[in-house]
Length: 127
Image 1 (cartoon, one colour):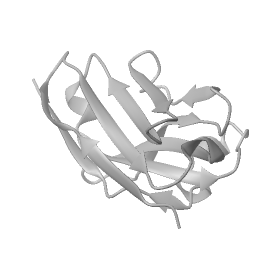
Image 2: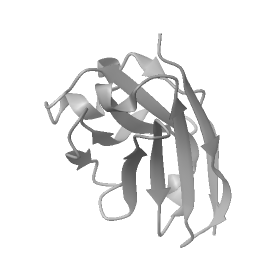
Image 3: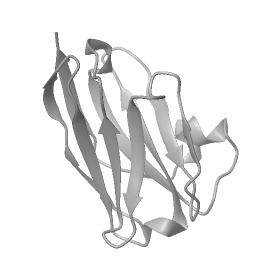
Image 4: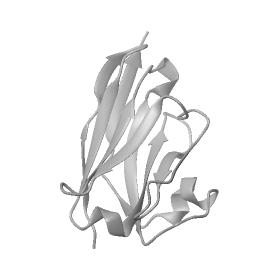
């Protein structure tokens, strides 16, 4: 049973940056990992996905060119670097993982495709 522990997040101003971390209890290269978010009153939506053992990344429109997913295989940690933050980015952010590779681009941003979830971390962007 993989455990994901998130850190980071908090308050940022519009145009600012934040980095979220997600530490895994297992070998992160064995998992497809993703970042999701859920804004108040909205459904959870997928932002980014990185395949297991490949650096191939897909991003939702809102994340493209602003959010960067990365991983440190020595620390078994996944990161989400968020730049040029907007007030609409205010949400609870979740990291997620699925054992094995997942190449399907549509599936990669679907909540139902992931088995393991972090506890969530609040990101609030003020204008």
